Amino acid sequence: MQEIKDIGLRGIPVADTKISAVDGEKGKLIYRGYDISDLARSSTFEETVYLLLYETLPTAKELEIFKETLAAERHLPAGIVRHLKKRNKAALPMDVLQSVIPMLADFDNEARSGTKGATLKTSVRLIAKMATVVAYWERIRRNLDIKKPDENLGHAANFLYMLKGNIPDEGTAKDFDTCLILHAEHSFNASTFTARVVASTRANMYASVGAALGALSGELHGGANTQVMKMLLEIGETKKVEEWVTEKLDAGERIMGMGHAVYKVIDPRARILYSISEKLAERTGNKKLFEISRKIEQVTREEFKKRKGRDIYPNVDFYSPSVYYTMGIEPDLFTSIFAVSRISGWCAHIMEEKFAEAQPKAVLYRPEAQYIGRYCGNEGCKYVPVGERD
Ligand SMILES: CC(C)(COP(=O)(O)OP(=O)(O)OC[C@H]1O[C@@H](n2cnc3c(N)ncnc32)[C@H](O)[C@@H]1OP(=O)(O)O)[C@@H](O)C(=O)NCCC(=O)NCCS
Image (cartoon, rainbow, N blue to C red):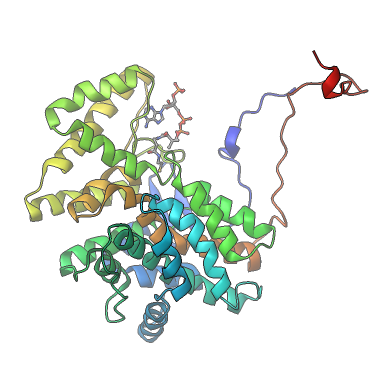
């Protein structure tokens, strides 16, 4: 029996990709060659999606057409809206997404076509409709009238409009748009890898995305942002942070939003979200959540260094909760907002899995496992019929 050093495939490259690169030592993230800080500062979500899907930044004309195509795909089939209205209002947004997104395949004639052109069209549909499903579910579960998508609004502003029922101010729409850019893509994380594994079986895109949504929902992945918000609300005041964090670490629990499987320095997305959270706190005068977050970061870093002799830093899920909450978004929606953005990265990866020339390419992912279960020699264990067992 050999010792498996790379449990969970940590540090093992499994395929080539041209979509994004994460440099964990330097704290850098690039999408198709462009630094995430530049995209967050100067791009828009739509332009970033175009970059991810089409491998290059669009011209002004290409961007205009892409925005129109995306906006035209936002509506949901009536059958899906009827289904949402019949669901148990207590259903969690991620559970709703994970079951409803694959249902959209019933309404997409091209879902099973398998050509690159059809897969691109389905990608655009999925990116447009993910936002609508999240917003519609939020309004339906609260017995509010649904707000049909407004084609004159950008993706971020339209999502907030469909969710809250009023058009957001420019600053809020811009901040939310930046959040979407930051969450769009992150190489072979758990949900993206899941999407690629399913795509490698030649399943349709909706099946891949449904599986990826399941992976994203867990609290060690996308579910962390909702847990961070619970922590902020539970702590409630800056002066309680030290005791709360120390107690959790003493009990061997994890502080959500802290630590990362790849980044050994601060996650570049967390740095940008920190400043969005800080500016939003100043703009709204609502500084408490930002201050509590900052204190948790400080105490966790100090305690972690004392206990483990190494550093820990906030990840993408640490400062986004204070931003979303200040925008008036319910905590249990945070992970589905992650999905509203990450769907673009998933689609780019599914396309790459199915059509890219990048080599080596897995035809079908199939890693090995080391069997450590019962073994009765070459003969195998003797099967005793159920009635004869003691
Ligand atoms: C993301 C995460 C799974 C990455 O983990 P990792 O760097 O591979 O680290 P491991 O899970 O192998 O843990 C390494 C050690 O650090 C500790 N650790 C890692 N993150 C921690 C956290 N947030 N709080 C407390 N301890 C933590 C682990 O308990 C472990 O301790 P041990 O060696 O004594 O067992 C981990 O940091 C985590 O659980 N973070 C909280 C959840 C989260 O924010 N997820 C979103 C990620 S974007």
